[in-house]
Image (cartoon, rainbow, N blue to C red; front, side, top):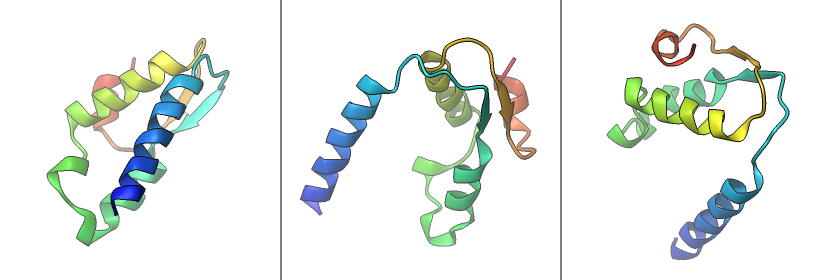
Length: 84
């Protein structure tokens, strides 16, 4: 398990460094959330969908993309408060 955690940290560092100035025209934000959230055994406070989590997620995306883009969410209303 420790090796997997270390690999995950290395991958996260790499993606944080490399995934910058992305030229996206469209993003679908809700699919991963829906998949994680629907798994009953995975429901924890750490991955709970709430306004603060959505805000942090969208703020991180804003730092990585260049220009304006269309965002589709699948109707999760929290995103209405955090996306202009």
